[in-house]
Image (tube, rainbow, N blue to C red; front, side, top):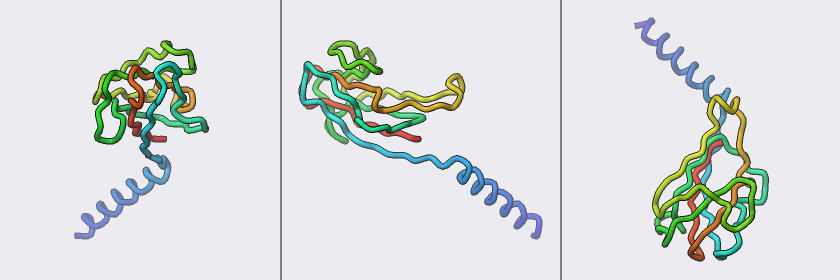
Length: 125
């Protein structure tokens, strides 16, 4: 019986240490674009993330009318090449090749063909 209790304690401590060493903040938000000719930044502040999933929705349960496009660092209309069909997902993650670095959400721009379409964003940092 003593060995079983000790094993459970070691597992509990190991799990607690893992969470303490790598605290991950998660969040979600919705962004829509009212203009079909001017792409918008997803955020204007410094919001860093290690992984983000973008879903083609204008609100949490309202599917877009048409596909939307995301692009990195370019606010010029038509230069956002990552297409997300209505209701579809796109995930961006920092893998081992990036050395554990992060992306900044303010470097991503949203372009829409139909006014008020957008993305729901789920992110981890």
